Length: 507
Image 1 (cartoon, rainbow, N blue to C red):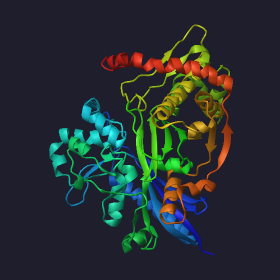
Image 2: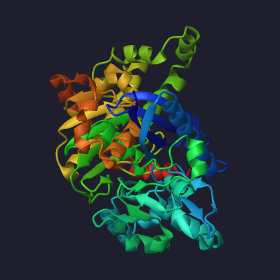
Image 3: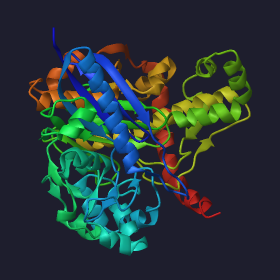
Image 4: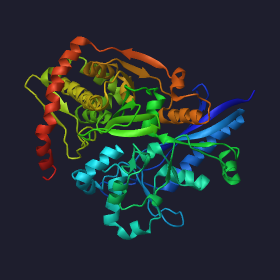
């Protein structure tokens, strides 16, 4: 019997993943293709757009071929993509540049100039994107200054998903969600923001047409349909950004519901029924669709902080564990558990890679505060884990001050494999934390948006039955009281050290 499926395609920072889902949310088949990040000078982070396009076509084609083989009907294809990408296109619709990704930081001087201006603050309040080198706004200013001849030849300024879909359908469209991460889009009026365009030196007609995440392309060219093993009439839903779709995939779609993801970096994202911006410019405000907005902040230093501590201070133990095929992180958890919550007064500012939310300071440095003669290596380990959670909590608190209380936390990412770390999150925030078994994250969110667009799902809220909560962590009152005292000190440290960090950056 013929069964139905939908394909979610996630165009990520280092790879593209195509996943076929049954209409009940179950994973049927998936394929992944990686591609390199080009970094030939400090701050550079680019990708070859053709490599990304071929990764999309090959993974999508292989997944569709599997569905064809096993007698599934592909109801449609829907997309997720990483935010903040930028590439320049000439009058013949050919790339003038590689694709600049969010990690490219060469526009930091332009970002600082805009951020510290009156117009920069006004732009943030209307676009919801903090002024930072990650976003296209300062990248455009930098390109205009550094490569004016190349900038002048550009007919279009687009991101990687727009490039892929143009190559398939010949139309430059951008979904509201990805547009809202560019620093150029008015999230209250759903249109390009004139002040931001003026700062960037870009005209509205040089940008793709903004459309809802449910916008659907139809009419695959026969050659593409054959390559992709799909009927020419297969609908392609434009979808949304990866961060917003990750919230959808965790079913955090009601106001007050937050998702905490900690992998190498980390993020806190909370759903709201309307956009909101923060006078202190601590959080972003992105669009999922016209009725759902995702507010939050990304932190640079998540699991990377624990990995740094492992490699620097537990190198011998790591080598021994690897030789025995053991998990070094289980050992680190056991060691950290020997230390009481609060690490006996030892605090860690986890800014090893500078920081984004809530301080948005690339000059910030990591440091331990409060060390005394009785502290051991185990105390420093525990302080590192607690410092990451304190950093996440600072974003949670900024969100609560901006849009109201966080009523529920859903957690995922690599840190969720550590019971100790997840319990810390519950204890520090004082909130119940639910671990979600989210199949394939943003690709699943893309599939859900596709089902909604194709009327296979009545509403985004109706996806609840597809999301499974594997475990719930309740805050331990005594630990929460201890952490409240430690966090009260933690949040005073960065403002006092900021000037020193800036001076260290000049040494």
